[in-house]
Length: 341
Image 1 (tube, helix red, strand yellow):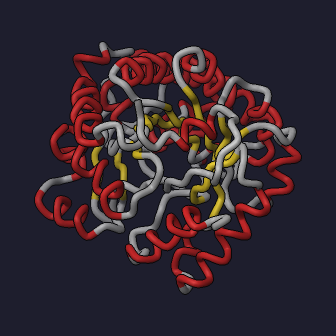
Image 2: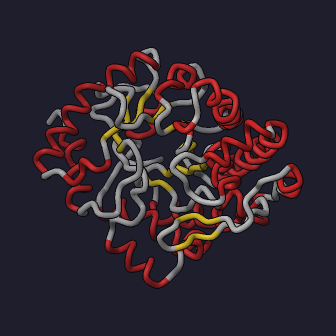
Image 3: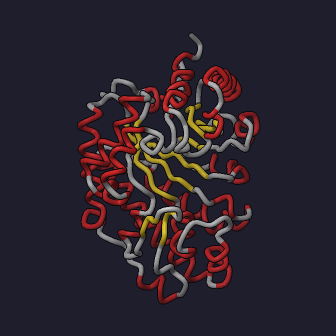
């Protein structure tokens, strides 16, 4: 039995004394303890060494004390497992030396045996659960098929992902084939995470906002919803699309337990577009954590007032930034815990 089950109760649409709180990317770069590990080990070594990944996962639980842990990993372990080479380069970020550009490239991509290729993630879950000792729930995650596709085709991050979009529009058969392979792999991956004991999963559609509403339905949501349909009978599923306010009504019709929203939409509009009853998660602007602590606390309380304390999970509208002072991150979490007192 998990001692602090507030997060799970919010996902169950239960009445709660206060909303739960966690932060996207809370296991990471704003914590000095994380940076100490980063100095010794490169990024994918941290991801692929269960002892390191589990330690990084529990660091914020000890230091910042949110209501849920999220496993330290990366969305790009999926394409790596599918035979697509992925590097992380300084000042560039993700870099794929051989991006997918042709039908033949797509044909070479395979759906892997999850335990053979991603067993280290499952080992990290096992170790993390042992360290958490049922204190808080553990969240597993994956990137949306569209977001993985963007990196696989573009070869690196982009402001517009024109190559990825162009591939979809000029070679839709191959594009859909690749998207389906990513989807099938992601379903297998998340199901395995659930078997190893994660309490919920989140699908991150970081680049969904690059698409028009019509193209979003065809190239992103169609595949995300396959994952939701496959996982919802087994666990709680949160979907988060950055810049995807136009798809909130469609997301609300799905079997997802919660929908993440970014900071570009008001609580009122998010509630309206999702029908008022779906659990929402978000949407504090990560840059706002640079505000003075009293301002952070005031804004957090105002945000909860606007969303309402029930059917709501407090979070940022995207990942925490590396230059956020730890005491400001703590103030964000503490403000939620102080709400209504």
